[in-house]
Image (cartoon, rainbow, N blue to C red; front, side, top):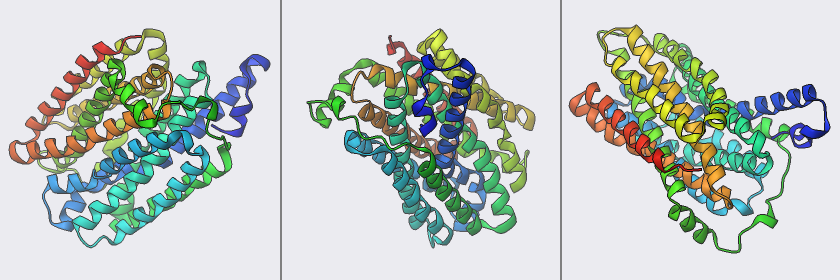
Length: 400
């Protein structure tokens, strides 16, 4: 990921020097991931305020906020399709720089339609950077280091959920909604600066370019039952995650819990355990295998669902912790598996996986939003549980 990490040769240097280099690489990977996707979920912390600001229903505002996942799904497919021909560093740098534009414009969005369009634009930029970084890691990391690199990247994603939501709630509460978006636009530019100074320029791997077209490679991936199952698992994971952490915000601010804006921000310390467990998930998957790791992770998330139906804050928070730990750990295992199962055209495979993953978020918002508005929180949680069960069934196909 960094110039330093690209020069590290594990067999030609002392173990402690290699460990320091690996730690530095993981730190840079994690911070880059944090600054890439921090906009995706931070806005969920201010969903109740945005709902009041635009005068719409929770389902409508939630769909607008999560419309970024549509942009991410489209960009994941497009970038994956053309991935072999895109310079990784230039693509990531351009994506993060452009991301600051729709982020800052959200501060002045006059209506929900414009807000939704800008969130889609954010998603296009975020997923472009996300997919290119995953492709870069898959190409430049050895098989031994790949698990740690992917875990570091997903850990940065987890940290963005925690810190992003906390900061978003604090800035919106103290300075207003507009300054919240200006602040996150500055973070996007910081991400571009980090990539500029740390990511080594690596030309696309021409020797590995397939003789078949990108379309043929995509079709071949879809014909592979292992990859097809992995795509479905990714869909279900974000479906469940979005359903939980979007609509629980409205539960937390309503009686009997009745949390204020800053209290709602502090609630997202529930992601802190996930930062630790996600780092370990790659090692667990390497030792136990992908299927046991995903099944165990989904079981942990499933245990958390009934706790979130309780009328007491402590039980709800415990449920949120378990769902976060379970879904993020499953995401690490599934993401790593795609890189292993796709013997070639990994950029296309990763892009397709991300497209399915983010489609799950968008469809989850739409379906579970309808359930939430029509039947309440219990129906929403039931829908999340069904998604986890489908993911568990699909995991049967993830053979070595």
